Length: 373
Ligand SMILES: NC(=O)c1ccc[n+]([C@@H]2O[C@H](COP(=O)([O-])OP(=O)(O)OC[C@H]3O[C@@H](n4cnc5c(N)ncnc54)[C@H](OP(=O)(O)O)[C@@H]3O)[C@@H](O)[C@H]2O)c1
Image (tube, rainbow, N blue to C red; front, side, top):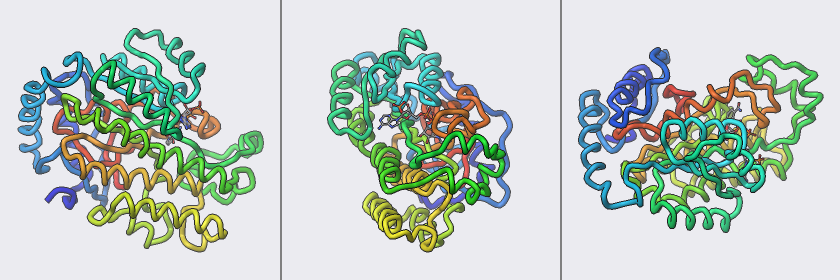
């Protein structure tokens, strides 16, 4: 049965590599030939709309391929083109994602909330198949304007990369830098106590974070879904998440179970979890009630984003809808504490944006490999 399949991540990663090799567009090369083995972990995840067995996933690729070819004459203005939107793309991982997608031949709409920052970013790329449109993920009118623009100009959308993000904290950057926290203790969360004095969460910063990383993604996705449904290959949605989202990092068993229970998860239930986070934040009960204390708003914003990704994947079985941790990347959002380049950081988003027909959906990836929620 779909969504209840629990298979080892090793098997799943092998299947994903196989599926990528059978990519009919031949645009995606496997980014890693080394299939990583996850000892003792499992991932609930499946291939688009079908059984997860190896031979079937290959067969499915060719079946869906011919169906897609048959509908190519129907939707969209140019049937051979693919059209992508990347949010928050004026800098960082988003800008690099645009660049890599454009080089792969996709027509990319680079979006940014600020016109100047967006047009400067497009100019910096100097690629003919990248165009700018303003998008503030917090603003309904801005989303509608983007939807109208794509609808008139292209008639459909093939790829949506929900990349825009906010950290959910106010930071004393100089003091943070002076602490010289090593990446290992930052990533593991061991630095949590050390950074409490320089990284502060307020109701205001938390609200902006959840509004951007969770409700913002929902707003943009809901607006663009009708255009994604017209995609000739079923549509791809990539939600840029974070390892802070991983359920094992949440101390409360109840919250972990609620967010991990794909059978009963609904958007309403996820929204309720967000409400209870804000209740506890207001009453200074985050720690007592078992929320993650390392970047609490950011962590829950990405955990709820992952849960939303799974709900959406279930609702739209013909699309590939996945979320991805890009790695620990040197960008503004982490005050340049990250160790990886944006080129490396964009690989996961690009891989998932260019998944072939019959590719995985409802999965969480740690960069280019499937991992446990
Ligand atoms: N860097 C990492 O190590 C890391 C790790 C895990 C996950 N991520 C995720 O990766 C994604 C990209 O982040 P990044 O590292 O590239 O950071 P970044 O360079 O700070 O980029 C964040 C982008 O989001 C945009 N943004 C924020 N609020 C927005 C809004 N309301 N509407 C539209 N755009 C908005 C920013 O625009 P402005 O320039 O206008 O502020 C900026 O373009 C985020 O979702 C982040 O959570 C990053």
